[in-house]
Structure formats: structure tokens, C-alpha cells
Amino acid sequence: MPVLDESLTPVFEEVVRRNPGEAEFHQAVREVLESLGPVVAKHPEYADAEIIRRLCEPERQIIFRVPWTDDAGRVQLNRGFRVQFNSALGPYKGGLRFHPSVYLGIVKFLGFEQIFKNALTGMPIGGAKGGSDFDPKGRSNAEVMRFCQSFMTELSRHVGEYTDVPAGDIGVGGREIGYLFGQYKRMTNRYESGVLTGKGLTWGGSQVRTEATGYGAVYFVDEMLRGAGDSFDDKRVVVSGSGNVAIYAIEKAQQLGAIVVACSDSDGYVVDEAGIDLDLLKEIKNGHRGRVNDYAEQRPGVRFVPGRSIWEVPCAIALPCATQNELDADGAAALIRGGTRIVAEGANMPTTPEAIRALREAGVLFAPGKAVNAGGVATSALEMQQNASRDSWTFEYTDERLGEIMRSIHDRCLETADTYGKPGDYVAGANIAGFTQVADAMLALGLI
Ligand code: GLU
Image (cartoon, rainbow, N blue to C red; front, side):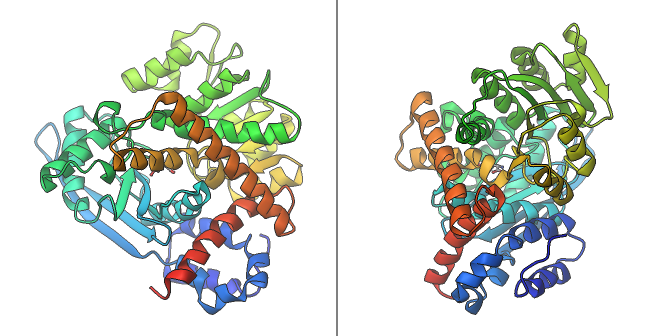
């Protein structure tokens, strides 16, 4: 493990001590602190105000019971979370994740990442995350609705357009946002569009929000390529996952001329040498909530490889777009063997610290999720703007704004990395640029 700056070691130790058993949260904090050595050296005022210790402690953490009945009339029980991490830059903002792996440590890692990601977008939004250990897989629409209604019955006390604005994440898409918004509206008797983002287009949603995380990730990588005098044209790309982020990363990469040869889910991966047929994949995933195995069954010549790592498929560009820690040291070794030049994180913290180290040592250009996948939340902020002005923008205009935001995040990462003596280091650039923006706002707002 790289050593932390002397002054940051006790901060990290305190985080581990105060948050026992939350491995993912420790990992996310450590990764940011590893970048901050040159910042604390240059800015003693941050240490004087204990900015970093304060940043590592969420402003508020809410944990609640979510009881609901299944279709057989049995009572089911889940746990709900909302961690409102930091509101120095604006109302708390961040998604809700419904997945059986969700526990406090996952929500805190995601909320912590969200602070810096949201700062990087340049939009006025603080950082938060929430969710539940509810597993939507195999549940009927009616069950998902009852769960969402029960979840919002408690969450409604803690959110609001000026307070906290949730959105989707894994397991939470347009359907769930609809049920959540419906229940909030019913409980408050207010059509408060700005309380949630990722809404449907006919009831306050924004164009491009569905596509934004995947498109944004590809816009970011396009800038990385441009910097090297290169482009996506004819590049062999592997995208892990097959959810919302993966699908729209594939779509935009294909539009820019790439050949996306593989995608995956938790059962395994498919290799399609002709390039993924996106219409078929969308129909399977969005139309039937199916699996990539179904894709292989419906498309001749496509291999489904169960239970193995997608990173063994050789590619020039790898986009991990599934979930945390999906790309480990073995995966990184496989990518390096396969000749990969760029790894950019579409998901939140999909690459383990060991894998990041191996990739960078091998000269692979690596860009972190808090910069690469910021297009989703940035477009959420554009949705909030449209709601506040009771306006709705065209697809083209919104997409243009997204493109500008991604290019500006990319440039800011590189400029910041340069300023702090780490040229070309996207990790340091993203962490330092996000951190200093939040830290300066916290200083200005006093001890709160
Ligand atoms: N869950 C997404 C993320 O990880 C989007 C959050 C949002 O739009 O508020 O950034």
C-alpha cells in the first residue's frame, strides 16, 4: 500500500476505528487521502480547521425499517439507508441503490465518493447516497411498488428540493423513481418536481438523464484519447455490466466507431466478435429484465462464458460499468496481457487498489469513477435546473451541455494534477480538484 502523508495517517486510523467493519468506506477514504499529501503541505488552513476529519464524518445518517407485503400477503422486512454526507456546495444529491449487498459501509463509500464527484461537475450539489438491501430481482411490479411506497414513507421526512434530492443507482431506475415520486407527492400534497431526479420525460424528467452516465463516460474517454492524438474509431472495447450505465456506454462508444465485443452480468459474460447488437441487448434487459445468457441464446455465434472474469477478453479500452471491486489484481493482469491501453471507471470504485497500482505500473492510462461517471449526476443537476425554471430542454441541447461538462471535468483533472506535480495522473487530479472545492466552501461556511 502506498504510504499516507504523516499528518493523514491518524485521520485514516480514526476513520477505521470509528467505522468498524465498513471495508468499502475505508477503501474509498484511503484512496482520496492518498492523493492529498501535496494539498495539506500547501494549505495548512485545511488542517487547522480539521477539514479532512470533518469531511470523513457524514453530516447525518438515517437508518430505518422498511416493512412491506409480498404478493402472497407475507410480511417482508428490509433496512433503508440515507447518508447525507456533505452539503457545503448545495443540497445533498446522490442515488439510491436497491441490492442485497447494501449495508451502511456501501452507502457510506458511495456517499463519500459522491461528494467529490458532485464537486467536479461544477454544479451546486452536495453529496449523499442511500438505498436498501431489498432485492428487486424476481419481484413483481406490485411488490416493487409496495416496497418503494414503504421506503418513501420514511424517506419523505428527510428529503426535499432544497434539502436532499435522491435519484437512481443499481436496482433503481425509472420505474422505482416513479413509485417513489408518487408516494412523496401523495404524502406531501405537493408536486415538488425537484425532490427526485431520473423522472419520466412526461412528468418532469430530463432528456439524456437515462443515457447520461454511459454517454458521459465515453465523452470522458474520448477526451483522453484526443489528448493522445487518437480516437475510438475501430478500437476494441470491453464493457462490464449490462445495466443502464453499460448499455449507454456501449451505445455511445459504437456511435464513435468502436467495436464493443463483450458485456456481462453477475452470472458471466458474452463475447460477440461482430460487436454487441444493442437493440437486442436493450430488448432483453429493458424489455424483459433478462440476463446476458439470453442474449447469447438469441444471437448466433455468440459465446456465453459463465462464472469467469470478463477482463480475460483482450481489448484496447476497458470500461468497468458494473459494481464496486469487480476488477481485481487478476483482472488487471489479464487486461495488461491483452494489451489494454485505457481503463476508465463507469461504475463507482470498480477497480481494487491493487488493480489500479498494477495498471498504472504497466503504463495503462487509468481514470477514476468520480470523474468518469459524473455525467449521470451532472445531468441530474440539469434536471433540477429545468424543474426550477419549469422548463424542458431538447435532447440535443442537454447532450451538448453534458459533453461540455465532461470535457471540463477532464481538463480540470489534468490541470489540477499538473499544478500539484502529478502530470497525467487522473486519480490525483480528480481527488484534489474535488476536495479543494469542497474544502474551500467548508472553510467559508464556518464550523458547522
Ligand atoms: N447514482 C448515480 C451516481 O453514482 C447518480 C446520482 C444522481 O443522479 O443523483 O452518481
